[in-house]
Amino acid sequence: MKAYELNVAGVKRQLPIIAINEHIKIASFVILGDTELVTAAAPVLAEKLPEVDILVTAEAKGIPFVYELSKVLKMKRYVVARKSIKSYMRNPLTHEVNSITTQKVQTLYLDKQDVELLRGKRVALIDDVISTGESIQALEKLVQKAGGNVVAKAAILAEGDSAMRDDILFLEKLPIFK
Ligand SMILES: O=P(O)(O)OC[C@H]1O[C@H](OP(=O)(O)OP(=O)(O)O)[C@H](O)[C@@H]1O
Ligand SMILES: Nc1ncnc2[nH]cnc12
Image 1 (cartoon, rainbow, N blue to C red):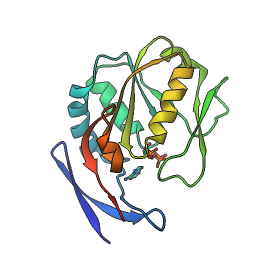
Image 2 (image 1 turned 180 degrees about the horizontal axis):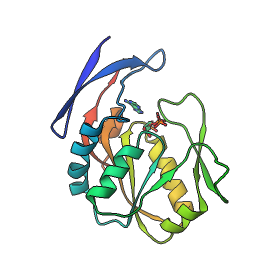
Image 3 (image 1 turned 30 degrees about the vertical axis):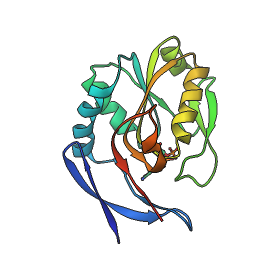
């Protein structure tokens, strides 16, 4: 299997190159379980962030990174938007999302308790990778519905054309393959 060598925050990884449709291949970047990479990347991205009150991510792959980043920033809480509704959620806010790796439209859900944590706050949206930008945009809409003020959008990697955006913070670029 072909691989792409990623160097980020002093950590090297061989990412398998995977076809996601007839035209596009991506270098699969999965930080779930990768304590070394998450621990190395969090303090470097923390340095780039402006002053914020709270961090928000969407499940799933953003979760370990936002956890580590919140520890580096000495924040007691962070917020996770879920991709399915759970019986323990009360009056969730919703917004639809469609990422590069997802075959169908999904919905993001924010529990009412989390909505209250975001109202009137300076929010940084955090993800492992930004590609089409659909996921981070959906998260922004959801946070705005909750009354939060998005002051930063950040990820470990910017994939494809997103690396040319000047409204996101990231550590390294990730190419898309034909
Ligand atoms: O900019 P985009 O094109 O939206 O792609 C980026 C999103 O895709 C991945 O999540 P994915 O949808 O694969 O879900 P997962 O984290 O639940 O695996 C990644 O974690 C980002 O959230
Ligand atoms: N390169 C990548 N690997 C895993 N998930 C992704 N989501 C968007 N780009 C991705």
